[in-house]
Amino acid sequence: MTLAALEITSSYYLVLAAMVFTIGAVGVLTRRNVLVMFMCVELMLNAVNLSFVAFARALDDVTGQVIVFFVLVVAAAEVAVGLAIIVAIFRRRRHATADDLLALRG
Amino acid sequence: MIAAAPIATPAVDLWAIAPIIALVATGVGLVLIRALLRRNPAVTAVCFSVAVVGLLVAAGLLARQWHRVRDDGPIVSLADMVRVDPFAVFLGIVVVAATLAGLLLSYAYLRREELEAPEYFALLLLSAAGMLMMTTANDLVVVFVALEVLSIPLYVLVAFDRRRLRSQEAGLKYFVLGAFSSAVFLYGIALVYGATGTTSLSGIATFLAGNTLFEQTTLLVGLGLLLVGLGFKVAAVPFHMWTPDVYQGAPTPVTAFMAAATKAAAFAAILRIVLTAFPQYRDDWRPILWVLAALSMLVGAIAALAQNDVKRTLAYSSIAHAGYILMGVYAATSRGREAALLYLLVYAFMAIGAFAIVMIAAPGSDDAKHSYDDYRGLAVRRPVLGGLLIFFVLAQAGVPLTSGFVGKLELFGSVAQAGETSDYVLLVIGVLSAVIAFAFYLRIAWTLVTAPDDDTAVAEAYSTRPRRVDGWTGIVLAGAAALTLVVGVLPGTFIHFARDAVFF
Image (cartoon, rainbow over all chains, first blue to last red; front, side, top):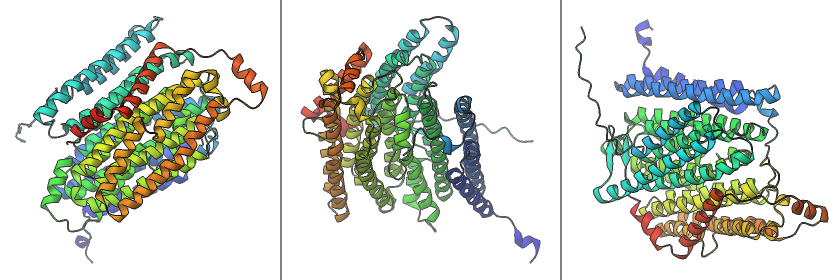
């Protein structure tokens, strides 16, 4: 097999994006540390960005790339608020693990 | 050298987005006023008044839009991304009314809980602006941005009570699951975009009508993920885990606002996405909605039975109500749409009324005591408050002569009309859920009219000075009760209103 036969098509990126998204989703659902859960959400969002760009390339359409900018802005705003909430809790409790949030169980 | 190609800018009809602009401008203005009047003791009162005026302006603009879109047809603007039609304006009115109610409830509440911060009002208005954006969105990207604009202020509002750990934990929980669901929703957009090459709802419909897809998996998975993402926002089972905790932990006026307004906005997005963009895929999304509706109705009603906290019970009841409204979406007819719209309107006021009483009636000053024991004998001690709460829970249960009865009748009727076996099964599940729900609504009512068992509890209940109902809360209560009663007794006008609003 020659190297030319190994041309990277956009479907490679889509598969990679699906895998990263899954890792992120599983991470949010199974990890207990809130900061790690945040990172997993970011992983999911960036996987989506990757698929948007790959689709934009495959479809030869610029919309997908434009959407990525929207997503980046939204993700930044979201993280700012999320970290602020964590800091507010941390000031009172000195740790941030989902398991410690016992006040609201059931 | 690259030739400077002229960039075609889309026509902007400011009139179409005027209510959104009014809310955003007021919200940003409030932050500015806050900064300018930092040390002034009247800052909260000033910000509150400005916020009320801003909402009234938005309501006035929506009322004018209503007449215009009903007579002249929908306004489509901003490169087909915004579509102002009777449907959008109707739900916009519900959102603005719910926001106004939430705002009026908050004023006395914030003072009582020593949380006075004018930013609260700004966040409320910005969230409402996101909801209005969502009702008019005609493009998946706009739906996503609107989803975030409405959610991000809500995360802060839920966590607003900085003295109560529960509030902050609820905020964190809502944030993590909200961010997760937005990411899922966004992946749905990506897959639909990949399959159809567009994110415009009408564009997707045109594409799907004109082309047969070589492979459907991408599109169907995308559609499924879109429904999952929005299912989180409307609190449909199995995506409801956050609802009881967040509704319980959030400051009560915020809970009222979320229950009423967020539901309306998220259902606007669901209805528009499935009916505008995917009418050809009816047979694929209807079973999903069937399952969501059936599970929400059953799980919501059954789990509510096991609760010992009035606020939590009302949260589970809101899950069951999401199931009832999903039945209208499932029907996928204009009658179903009309019933869903009517129910969103009447549920908004039943929920706001009930949560308003919860806000006043809870003993203590930290908005944490909402167990059944804390409410025991309320209707004896304070007949008006207790009576109103009984009225609102009976309305939610669907007792005749209340709006809940009319709304449920319309929803059940819309499902029965289609007449297939699966429709009747769903109908039976709906009726079953309503019967089960009756049990816990009656339990709340019974708790309110019975006196506490032991004497110390009685003495304690009578020793605490009854909380005065301030004027703003009184207005909200009177309005919610009046609407709940009027829709129940004279439903004609409101059914016509909803019927006019079904048009996309």
